[in-house]
Image (cartoon, rainbow, N blue to C red; front, side):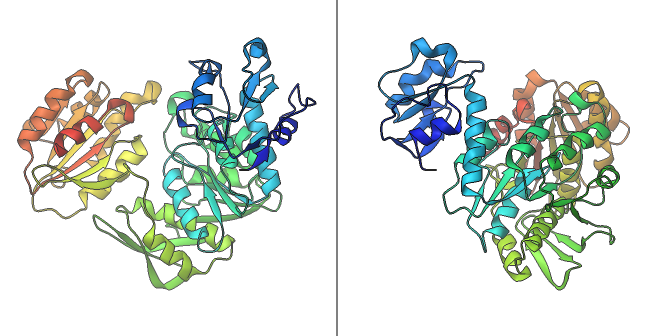
Length: 458
C-alpha cells in the first residue's frame, strides 16, 4: 500500500478532508500500536480498550498519520496528520474497499465450518504459479482483518484470496459485499458456532451469505456432497462448480491413500496422474479439490497446480506431526476443534501405522451451546479400542464422551479430567507414553492443550 494522506482523507470522507495536508506518504496500516512499523497509518479502534489511548506508542513505533474519532477530537495529537472520522472501524473498511477498487485484482473469498484456512493457503499456492497473489494473513478473517488484508496488497497484486469467518448472521453478508468476490468458495458445513445458530441448516444459511456480493459473472464453488449446500445452490444464478467424492461433482476425488505425512488422490478431470498433498487425512482432499477448481477456473494448467499442492506448506499448529521427549509421535491439532473436525482427525489418526499404542487426548469443543454434551458424546463413533487404545479427556463436556465410552472401552483405558485437572492429566499421560506410541492432541484453543504438548516435548 502506498497512498498520500490527502488521498486517504478523501477515501474515508474525513470531516476535515478539506484542510491543507502535508505531503506525507503512508505505506501500511496497523490497529495495534505494538505491531506498527515506520510509515504506517494508525487506526485506533474502540473495543475492550480504546485505541486512542495508545497514540504515543504508535508514534514511537513510526506512525506517520492516524485516523481519529471525532468524539476524541480535543485529544488529537499535533505531531502528525490526524484524519477525523465519525467511526474509525467504518473508515478502515471504507479505506479497504477504496484500495481494493484502486488495485482492482480478482477476488477469491473462502469460508466454511472447517478447512477454510488450509483451503485459502492452498488456493494462494496454486494461483501463485501464474499470478501475483495476496492472501489473508493468519486469522485476519473478520470485519477488521479483511480490510487489513486488502490494504496489505502490493500495487501489482492480480488476485487476492480472502478468508472469511463468522459466528453470527450478517457477518458474511457484510464481508462479501465489501470485497465483491469473483469466486466464492464454501468448504463444508459443520457444527462450528452452533451455539449461536442452533442447527446446521441455519449455519448453512449463514455461510451462503458469502455469495451476496458475488459478481454477476462470478463462480460459486462448494462441497457438492453436502445436501444443505446443494439445496441452497438452486437459488444461485451465478456459475456453479462442485467438488467432493460423489461422481456427480464437477471435480470428484478417488483412490485416496494417506500416510502420516502425505495424502494421494486422483481427480476425474485429470485421471492420468495422482495429486499429492503434504498433509495427512482424507478430509484434506476436499480442501485440495476446492483449490484445484479455483485453479481451473483461472485456467491454470493441472501440472502447475499439481506441483504447487505438492509443495504447499500447511499453516503452523494445525494437524502437524511432532516428536515428544521419549520419541513418541505427536499429532498436534490444538488450534481449534468442533465435532466434524474432531471426527475427521480421529479417523485419520486411527489409520496411521504404529508399532505401539495410539493415544487420543481430547479437550472440550467450545461454542456448541445446549447441544454440547450430545455433540461431545457423538465422537464415540470414531473411537474404537482396536485402533485407538487409550483415551484421555479434558473438560467439563468431555465427561459425556467418557460416559459414552464406558461401554466400549476397558475402564483402565478411559481417563477423564475436569478442566482444572489438566496438570494431573499431563502427569498421568507422561507416565503412560512410550517411544513407540502415537499421541493425538485435539481440542479448542480455550482448553489449552498446548500445555500438554509443551509437557510432552519438554
